Image (cartoon, rainbow, N blue to C red; front, side, top):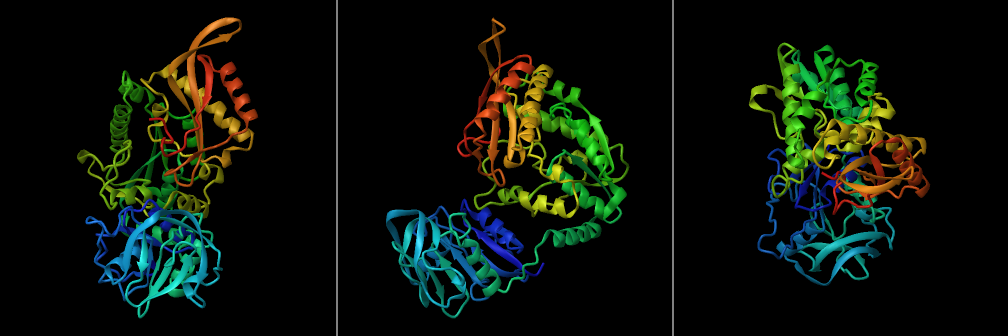
Length: 509
């Protein structure tokens, strides 16, 4: 890849969003921490500096060495980056009299500046900073202002260094994508060649070169990531790919059989393993969410290892790791604080002795879906809602029993099928039901009942990092609640979760 864009992360909450916007322009980019600039910059044609929660005036502020980049590659410094150049190169940064946060409009834009080509005055931008640039750095030329901010954008003479006080990557900056395109395509000359087709061709070629005639084993989950990884690998190595789909007893109703049927039509070499009893035994009496995840993870590795040993001379384990997982593991402040562990993340036990291959490790979730479409994968499978690796175990609060799994499978099936019947499924990013560890009093058939409570959860999101609850029609919720209570023995109350992420997570455990 010779048309890459390097994004240096200073810890901004928006850094991944910058990458997503660049990728939407069909331009490949990579995120690296500001203190880990790649030694080899020959493949990069432009650099973007992210924002940061730090103040440039603070003693512990990020202070990168940009000597290998400045004056050699075009730079777009966003927010903190703009303040960094001002503060350390002859300008002046001071605390704002009022925090500059939210919508603003560009009241003045300098004529005939390529960074602002096709962007008109009064264009809305998004501010998010508590410091402001009072004086520009040496050799700087002001490019734009807002009503409250004189130095909203500038460039430095004699080099292709541009700086902006606002965030072009967020939705509220209405011409933000145009500005990024101006910088990357018009100024930096980056080719817009990062397409799903190009990714498939390049990845298949790289996989063939890396793997050769070796055998690869892949654990399928029925989800988008592992399925796309499997089809990519199948194109590259064919019969040397061995897929294993494990039923942990915590899948949705009928999912084990239906997913195996789908895979049969895709030409994949798949073996289905029903280990549901083994998983339920391992979970017996465990209520703590983290202990449940660990029990499932350990059992999965044991089952998977048993099956892998049935295949002679396996060299690689394939995983559907995607880019957000990679970014978090090399973030500015080190690995992110563990909110909850994942059964397929964190490396392999020594006894497995397998090398890892991750063909999707540089893709975001929506890019995985676009690659899947390019590969001809069934749109219904690509459009499936995300489903947690531990399955229904983390949607059953408290200990796990076969009866609780049965109840939740029935409730979940009614809810999700109802979304499909009402043409709501594709308007929701993820939906599911949660079995609560409480019982409530009810009246059914003139008799008093004391039965389970279930919560329904539906969210809209792009990649799961943030999420809003979906305002489903009251008529749909009413019908769904009535159907669940009438058909699922053991449930007498249904509630709807209207919490967003943050502060809540999408899953309850």
